[in-house]
Length: 165
Image 1 (tube, helix red, strand yellow):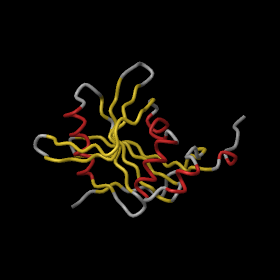
Image 2 (spheres, rainbow, N blue to C red):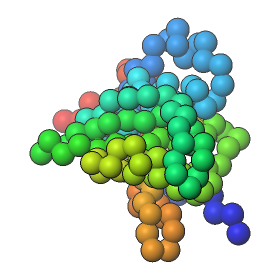
Image 3 (cartoon, helix red, strand yellow):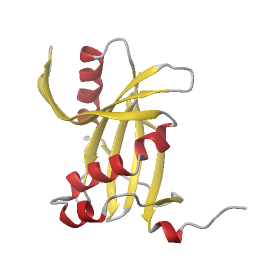
Image 4 (cartoon, rainbow, N blue to C red):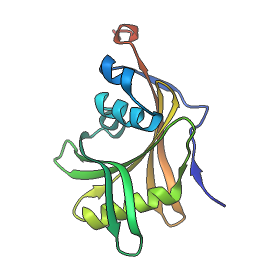
């Protein structure tokens, strides 16, 4: 049985003001690249993880002993309020894709090999609709990869976000 990560239809959506530059949104070429761009410009990895995160490298292609060649969609590094450092491999898929747990396992192996001193928090992102994004935090357990957190974010025009009093 091939396990895949798929968004739940029962999740509440958090409305986030869309900070993607209009010209970037207009010319994005495909769903996966557009998703990675939206994650970056809207700081969704920061919001989702409660860390301050920075994109370190896109499409990291490397080899890991016992796995051979691996490509990770994007690597972020982050820091928490105590100054602890993290590495966050991000796996992304557009509307037509699903994320297999084997890909998450390879991303975790890359982080363990290349960033052994950092705490690894694996993130998967799926574009549900053009501006609706599901984010998942995944963890290796004794029973394999498991989703520990799932949140959905809808990017909206900043004028559509109500002020809370």
